[in-house]
Image (cartoon, rainbow over all chains, first blue to last red; front, side, top):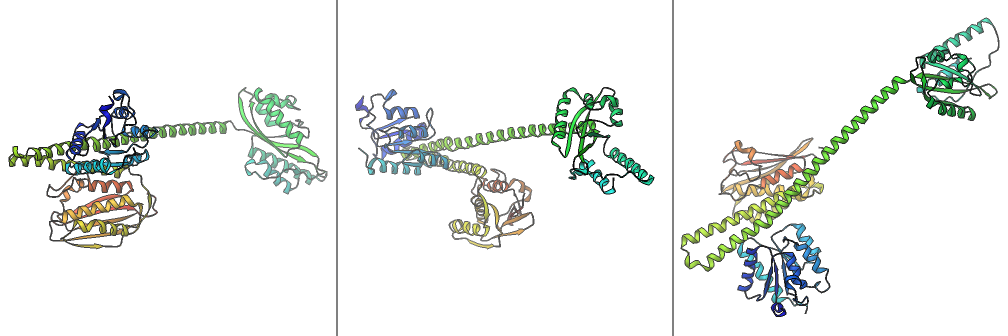
Length: 148
Length: 422
């Protein structure tokens, strides 16, 4: 089991299959991430990060380099995921970037307040979208120095 | 009794005058001439008349609070004979529930030498019906300062009490009515708030879900174009481009719906707004980029300060400017004129352009959401003027427009004059 998760670089939390496909396609095309885990709701995201449920066996310490987190998610929403992750001493420092369709001021403010490392609005136009995802991948997967 | 003391008595006997004459000294009358006696009789008659004028009857009691003189009006009213009412007997004519209280307050006043005594009780009329009675009395001192007697009046106040009761009922009814209406209004306000919240949720969901769908349409058609270009002929590629262009339009629509929603719900921070400065600022930041290479004359007149939310009013000017820039584009030489006329109740601001204008027949549609009077040769979704209207309306103002096809348009908005209450 442990091997399966060993090289997870990016956790993508998005309930939109098309958004997820476009995002992963872009990252792979630019060779920015090889091992991406995609989950479709907040509960699965927490299961993965805490190594429980269907992700039992995944070590909490084996954290992704970055979590791309949508806000509006089934079951447990993105803001709640942020809160629970930041409340855990082991996961407090895992980089989380909120990647959302919303550009509502309140969502942005609340995301930062709950400890997001960044907030990025998903552009609708494909060219802009791939550009944003590529830059995010470059920054968090290549440029940024991870904690461990 | 000298005339001056009589007038003092008069003042004391009329409760509504509330003259603070604590006690009255009766001048000792020397037994004298017939003239004196007749004078005395006259004073007595006048005194009785006075009592009748202010009350249903008078009363007297001695320094110990006992009835020692006949009180004819009392006897007439209650049927109590003098024998029955003398001493403390009068108390028996009161309603049994009132006797103790009246007795106690009365003798307390007597004991303490109170300067005046006032009470209300139910008094049994000779027909057995209890009537509400009001009684009042004052202490009368002898020349040596000792208590001589008590003098007072009493009146049947049943009608007055009934009227008061009626009034009270009406007032209570009114209170209830007001309370019911208030509750109804509050319920309506709650309902409205709930509806607005629903609409907000709707707008939020639009921004999220519709955008995700659009991104997919745009993204996958782009992937199709890139990855399968060799399998698509020019017409196939054109068709896909139409699909992608439509997503751009739809995205703009979504943005505009959200802008409109925000203009309606954004909290207003009211204060003095320098409209002249606001307009200069909007022109400085927005105009240059939008009108490069165009000949556009601009005249800005004096603009009085407004009471309002600066951020929202900025959007008003911004949308009007966008509008003017857009619809003057086909004209080689265009002119924009901004000014105002100040009235007592409101200040009217206007924004005139020499653009393509519009048919006054459709003036009513101009400020409607998604209403467009022009075709796709002009960009836009038809939300800009709706935003103008919403913001101005939120400020308690109004909007209208005048125009002529091919001959420019003038947009007006009026805001309540500074300091006016509306």
